[in-house]
Image 1 (tube, rainbow, N blue to C red):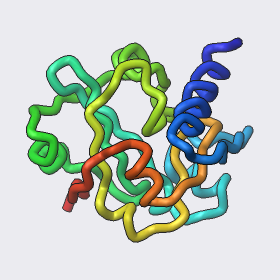
Image 2 (tube, helix red, strand yellow; image 1 turned 30 degrees about the vertical axis):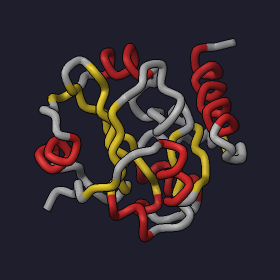
Image 3 (tube, rainbow, N blue to C red; image 1 turned 90 degrees about the vertical axis):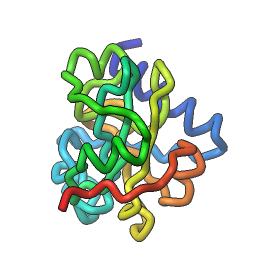
Image 4 (cartoon, one colour; image 1 turned 90 degrees about the horizontal axis):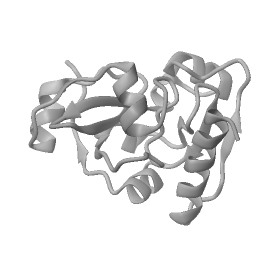
Length: 158
């Protein structure tokens, strides 16, 4: 199994273990950015739940935010109660098991700190990365909150 196939398999297993249907879809044109994903899926950019990864004391902090938003690191840090630092692509892959552009909100190789953007709660359905820059899964805000256990916070940059 290729590394990419393994990433999708991890997300699929996490979805099924959480009692969520396997709604993973592959888009060969790519879903690397929120705009690419929205175009492929046929939804608004806001409906893309993008996972932004920061370093938090050697652990990944994954902020699941609306594709229309930029994360305010100070707001996210305050909500999580930790100091956040930038994470480079190699570190993100090593800690989450996913390449940037395919970081899923679930299925990480090490348990991250998670935070869910309150703006996602007003959108339904939403789509999140499923392990590669060409796979996403469809869900609802309530289901994403349930399967991640992520607290909700205002994280949008003004």
